[in-house]
Each structure stands twice: as structure tokens, then as C-alpha cells.
Image 1 (cartoon, rainbow, N blue to C red):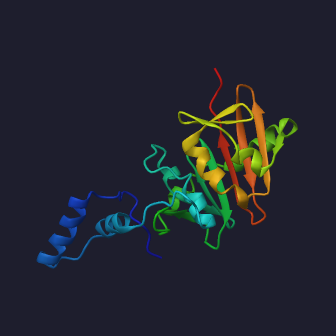
Image 2: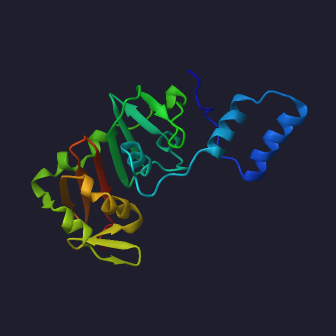
Image 3: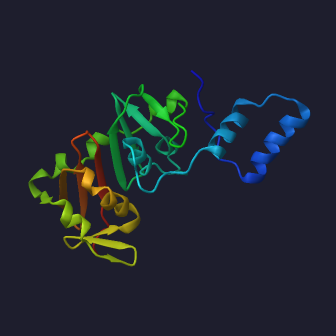
Length: 204
């Protein structure tokens, strides 16, 4: 199976044009890295309002994290995961185990998947289940937004991270707010097997 070149990054418009122009006039075959770069360039942007389970997972995948293995969707035992250190989104998928480009779903170097963290260990409901507060969808959809901060039951969250969750809240049936010291985590699940958690902003 062909994989995305591990060092390929989305090129600028000028660079993408030069790659195509050079190949057109010289007749030289594009390298695997050049093909991967063009694939990334022409790939559609992430959807801000997720329509499918994979769209949902893509939202949590960073684009240029120094921990490069987080820049991909990781699939393990039929569950796709996206994690940027602030949020974790998961959904069941029909894909083989491995790492996938979030824009194209092209498989990437299998060694990258082997470095993906065990995200199940950080799920707060396994650590602080006794402090969980059950919320209704309406509780989350009516929250106030103040200068990039969203307050849920008085706990602050980054609006950029929480807004896509609020917009898709009708798809989730199990929503919990889990306080932990001076911050809280919002956990949400759906009947289809989708799972998400968003870490809040620490209170001063």
C-alpha cells in the first residue's frame, strides 16, 4: 500500500505550481515526496462543522505539532483518534490500524502510529468518576461566550475548542463535566460510539 511521504508538508501555491511546471516541461516523473505535497495542497480544508465521525475526529488533529505523531489520525482496533493535547476526539471507523493523513486519509509511515500515546489512560471519567456532573444538551448549548472563553457551569473553556462541540451537541447523548482541582474537563459520548473530551482553562 502506498503511503504519504513522512516529511511531506503542504506547499505554498507558488511551490505547488513549480512542482507541476517543472514536471510538465521536463517530462520528469514526480517523486513520492512531490506527489505527497501536491496531495496535501489540493486536499480539502477541515470542516469546522463536522458532518461525519471522521470530520469530528479531524477537528482535534493539530497541523504542526512538534510531537509529529499527533499531526495524524491514529486508528487502533477500529477506533480513530485525534488529539492535540487540549482535546481528544474518537469515532469508530472501517480502517486498518495505522496512522492516516487527516486531510486525505492516505496512510503514512507505520512507525508514526507506533509512537501514538495511549489516550485511554488520560480519560478523566476513569480517574475522577465520582466528581462527574451530568449535563443536558441544553445546559451546554445555552452557555455564555466572553472574549474567546466559554463558561460551562462556571468553568472556563477555550471557545475555539468548545464551539464545534456545542454545534454538534444534538448528536451526543451522554455529557459530563468533570472538575479536577482548578480546572474541569467536558466529556461527551454518542450512541454511535463517538467520544470526545475537552480540557478546560485553569482557574487562577
